[in-house]
Each structure stands twice: as structure tokens, then as C-alpha cells.
Amino acid sequence: MITDFCVICGTKENLHNHHIVCKKSKLKPISGDIDHYTNLITLCGEHHGWIHGMKPNRFNDNNRLRMSGIAAAKAKGKYKGRPPKIDMNEIKRVLGEGNSISKTAEILGVSMSSVQRAKRI
Image 1 (cartoon, one colour):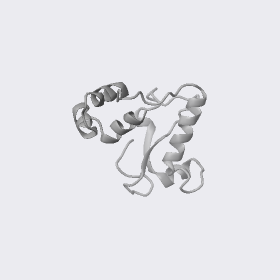
Image 2 (tube, helix red, strand yellow):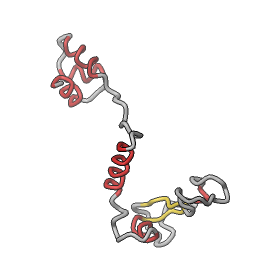
Image 3 (cartoon, one colour):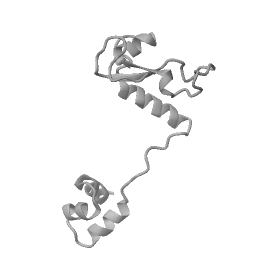
Image 4 (tube, rainbow, N blue to C red):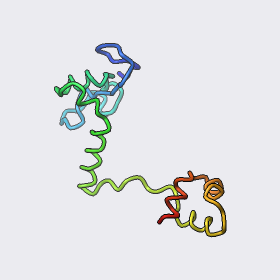
């Protein structure tokens, strides 16, 4: 069950949802859906790591874990990154009409740093 606190210590910080039946397991949970709320419990990062038998705080390093997961997916050719939301050619076109960087950013609804980046390319 998903809660707003760690079911072991009660803290409300650094919460993770732990799968009771692990995603890689050949077993199936009773609900049949590995991500169903009945197959999840809420744990703080420390206790989640404890359950997985990891060193304290290793599991708390979500950024490192996310980056290693992305690197593995890229190596398999399954991750290409987020598609760009900003059309650099459109920025260059609006700049070419004589608009300032701030005016271009305002017209296109992008940040000034995005306009400056497009200008350098």
C-alpha cells in the first residue's frame, strides 16, 4: 500500500515505493499487475536500501542511479533523450527579423538562454 510515510520508521522524507514482488521476478503478485498499489509499500530511502541489502545512503543517490540507468538504456539503443521542445531554426528566424534576444524569447515563449544558445549555433 502506498502511504505518505515510511511504513518502518514513519518519516515523511525521501520516500520510495518498494515492490513487494520485484519487477524482475518470475512470480506474479495476486493482482497480476506488478505496479498495482497492493504490490507496493512506501519506504524512506534508508529503509528501501536496507531491504535491498545495500550500504546506507547508497540507495538515496537517486541522481546517480538515474544516470546509470539512462547510460545502460543508451548503450542498448533504447534511450534517445527527450525530444527538443524548442525549434532553433524558428529562434534564428525571429532573431533575423531584427528582434532583440529578450523580444525573441518573449515572442516564442522560451528563455533568453535558449535564444542565446541558438544564436551561438
